[in-house]
Image 1 (tube, rainbow, N blue to C red):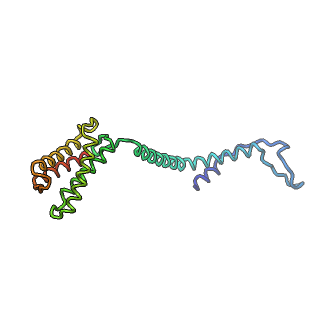
Image 2 (image 1 turned 180 degrees about the vertical axis):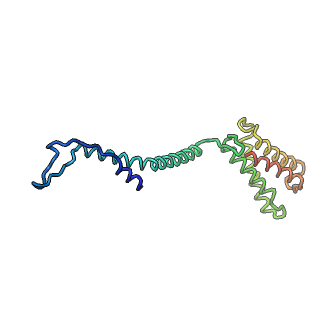
Image 3 (image 1 turned 30 degrees about the vertical axis):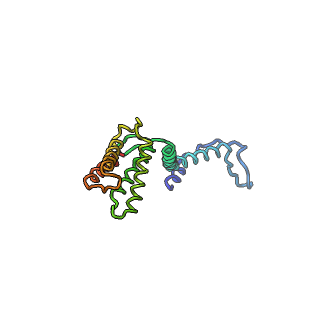
Length: 194
């Protein structure tokens, strides 16, 4: 800021011709020159310009920061209102689909990793997984916007493998490790593409 003040002192002040109307007398021996209105305006304008040049970089930086913050707020609001979301792979998919698919992956993984010896806890997790699968299939089966997506294909493979096993072995059969591993691999592939 000191540089700016010294720059203001160095600015030339235009000289103004004075006439008898711009002089006042305080003593009979001492005459002092009173600056004219125009000269005062010129001095204040030069000081304001000097100050503006000093403040300009700070003002531009503050304005850029405010614009960036406004842009972040605007993008957040747009993101909330936008029905689509960009995935890790860069594809744009419906938010509802991504939320539903992530819920299926989480619920299925939790139920598969649960120890089947604790029957009550196992049933709770299995029921939650069953409900999320029903909701997912009810909303997204046959939807053209997601049917060709890798996550949809992988989730469908995992669900079909699970359904295929239980249709053959019965609803209360214990899931063998090889089927569990295959389903978990499909879930991992689906999660990576979400």
